[in-house]
Length: 77
Image 1 (tube, rainbow, N blue to C red):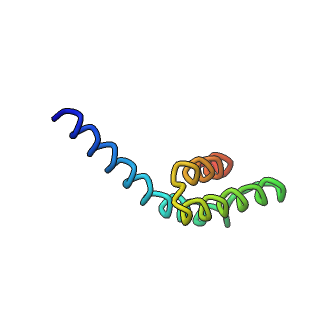
Image 2: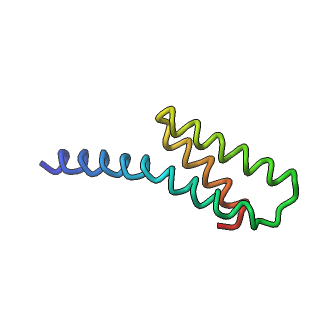
């Protein structure tokens, strides 16, 4: 019974993070206009955000969250 519960929790945690990708993208989009970054860094943030969206759409949510987290770190959020 414990194993079933753990499996269910694992499944729901995966689904929860999968649905968080769009929230992360919204946070990045909201911060970009006011961010004070060099053009090189802003280009990298935009590329990471784009990669995050592509990975999300491909169902690769862990990889998406990783790219989005890096973009958020660069933006200071």
